[in-house]
Length: 125
Length: 125
DNA sequence: TTTATAGATGATCATTTGTTCATATGTGCT
DNA sequence: AGCACATATGAACAAATGATCATCTATAAA
Image 1: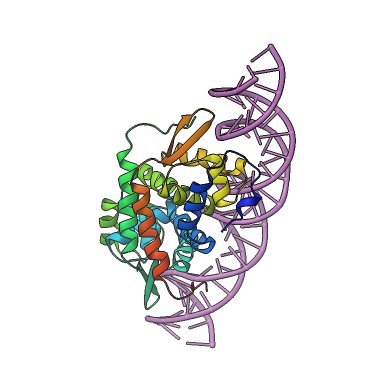
Image 2 (image 1 turned 90 degrees about the vertical axis):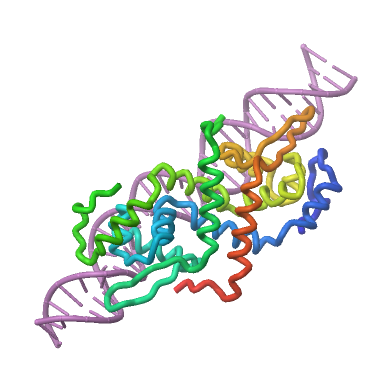
């Protein structure tokens, strides 16, 4: 909750602000959500996750599929791992990565809907 | 499509790679998706969007609700606008912002599910 | 126990990002 | 026209990010 009185600006609709503040989740939740989405906010990681939607893959496979260096993939896998977006199992020297849960697929589906639905260009101005 | 032969590494499961590459969407889609998620990947923007889920708000209101500077909010609104995540209407001097479509709410719902479902700490190591 | 391979990790560096400060628009009022 | 207010925008800068390179660890085979 932010102190209302600290705002110097005059145009505020106090009731609205108070109502929304009441509904607003805490700072920690906002940060967690942002972290999750940020993890999905990179082309390399998007490709990794989408690849894993088809089937589990080892790091080498991922490297070949998305056309990035092994190190880059490995670094990005760490990010995804730390947010529990992917998991892995070991088989000899090879690590097989897969999606950690079903949420990612749903998030992607929603995201794709938004992206593909927009026919017009971005209104950058 | 990435050239398979260019990969020097030996551990590849060729059939898997080929299958996944076939299913994988294009570079442009991956980038668009990543852009969308990146836009959601910041606490300030998360708060703005969540606030707007309750009702339309002017910039001043948003400033008060999320406790950021007017300039910061304005800058972030531009990002959200450029990705068509929010829209606005003018009423005199005041601009009322609102969510551009229903996708965002669904994305947030999914994201919150993932975030709140995880009881354990992040396995950072 | 040496060697090779799959993968992880740390340092480095250029790029991107988000905030702040100062200034510019646009609208209504007088 | 002149002023005030709501908001936008550009410059500047510190902080975060992502790729690369070099190095390290773990496992398997010889």
